[in-house]
Length: 393
Ligand SMILES: Cc1cc2nc3c(=O)[nH]c(=O)nc-3n(C[C@H](O)[C@H](O)[C@H](O)COP(=O)(O)OP(=O)(O)OC[C@H]3O[C@@H](n4cnc5c(N)ncnc54)[C@H](O)[C@@H]3O)c2cc1C
Image (cartoon, rainbow, N blue to C red):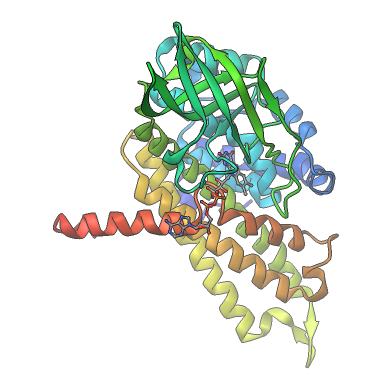
């Protein structure tokens, strides 16, 4: 590999080495497994086994809790490399960072030890249970799941759907309304271990992101001790917003990887493919205009993501940056994979070529972690606040 150019020169030697480690792992381990897990609609267990064995899991969780202690920019850089080969596999590998966020952000020391350190030591997985089948996933505070105070603990009932990594998870971070002495207190977060009353369905049959198991999980009168409540009762809104800001950062990295992988495959093919009057397809000016436009967008989204990573490393707010990065990355992924499919001709829709899978995977990205419309609405609110305040616009 040549010396880092342009924005890559901003990375530290450790971050660059991590990028190469992730790229090599993606080529060697993820590439052969990805089409199989996609076809079989299953969690990529063989990839996870190799990632645990090589110390690649949880690179950016605190060392004190069992993580690798790397910078958040490392998550963006590594996630992009893993996702360049298979975005849904990268999602499954990195998801504990996001699912455990409520405990990391609002939990106390005992909860971090119980729900993070112990989980990682057992090589376990956590899931984030926000979306419900009957309530709008965009309007998360309108949850119907309910936890009633009972003795010195809680009893939780409700159903969550599209629970990422849900079939393998042994801990569920559940957003539920809270009731104490017959009075509704508003939504709270609960850390719910897999156990009696937790019913986990099979993976759903999705168009894309098929190897991310997203079952429906029902909580049927699940008894929870007092230590399972994360943060104060009825005060989940801030924890939820912080968690969403964070998962959109990881999401953007994975989504941008789809575009990077698509372009890495496409360019050599365009250089080799000859079209009338016998010249490489890449010589056509409309093809070059497409490539140049996509390259500009990749660089812009990457820098926005790294800015969000630096803010996260400094413990500063990054809602605008992560919403913008996730929104731009997912809209770009849909357009870029569509353009690639067209340029490949029949290969763009043939299941044996990676372009068709990328097109399917990209389609899911404008929906999860908040739809594009939800990001736009949040960004519009931020814009109006900024203008009213006299404007760091
Ligand atoms: C691959 C994948 C993985 C996922 N993983 C998880 C997970 O791990 N945990 C979890 O909890 N959920 C998960 N989800 C669910 C996802 O977060 C929700 O699907 C998403 O937030 C949208 O919610 P909804 O599907 O209920 O759509 P709705 O909220 O019902 O929205 C339907 C449509 O209305 C639009 N809309 C909604 N509100 C407004 C508004 N105010 N103004 C204008 N338009 C609006 C939306 O943009 C959308 O187009 C996952 C989804 C996918 C596809």
